[in-house]
Amino acid sequence: MTLQFPFALLLFPLLLILVPLLSRTRPSHSQTYSGPFRFSFTAGSAGENAALLLQWLGIALLCVALARPQKGFERLPEAGEGVDIIITLDVSGSMTQTDYYPSRLAAAKKAALTFIDGRPNDRIGLVIYAEQPRTLCPPTFDHSTLERFIQEADLGILPDGTAIGAGLAVAARGFNYSTTSRRVVVLISDGEDTSSQIDPITVARAVRTLHGDSLKVYTVAIGTPSSEEGLGVDRETLSRIASMNGGRLFDAESPEDLDQVYAAIDSLEASTLPAEGLFVYRDSYMSFLVIGALLLVVSTVMRQGYLKVVGD
Image (cartoon, rainbow, N blue to C red; front, side, top):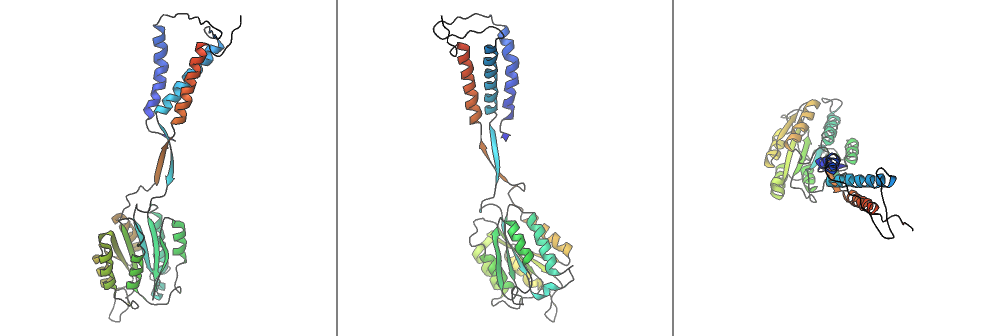
């Protein structure tokens, strides 16, 4: 429970000091109540002490109500808040190479998991691709489920090959139901496009046309540059894809570089939501206000003698 105006609590000790001082300056007058109901007090009597206790307890509760106590609870962000991100991971046969320990794929998955842990308030999804693409998890706040999909992503799920264009197309399609204005594709590849039916640059151009500035594509190149034999990652294509869609190409030549790549993307696409979560606060002062007022009424009634019947 939190207090919106905690300084209101200072009213209670202030009253405790001022009221006795003011009462000493006033002359005391005895009062006699007639009629069938009478409640007379003498100084220090049990009735007087009880009424006084109820009075001050009521005042204390009213001071708490003035401080406006609130109860808070954490909520998940709405779909239109934060950043929607889709990690698009290459699972072709070349990702088994061990120039990254223990393998390129294992290093890429580990870096992705670290990235996800640092963005609790963003919806993140996963697309894998080899000869064909497949959506394993749409953008979601359920990061524990997403992490299981990443851990289970492996070679052999899809026919071998590299379809960068198809992977990008499926990732962009994953934002069809996104309501946020900030969308990001992180496209990871260690080879050249060998399997897409449509050229990756054509796909990138179509993504730009459909999504405009609301979608950025960051490409991550793993491995060695392409050679005359057609082996290695095609950095030129990845660079053009990123530049056409407001992103940039990152070179990752080691697992440590992969961690730095995700850290850079994390800073470039910082979430506007607080890392500690979102909280909703609801007022809970009404109970203090009602009980405090009732105690003051009871105290007043006791002082006026309406709780004791006096016989002849």
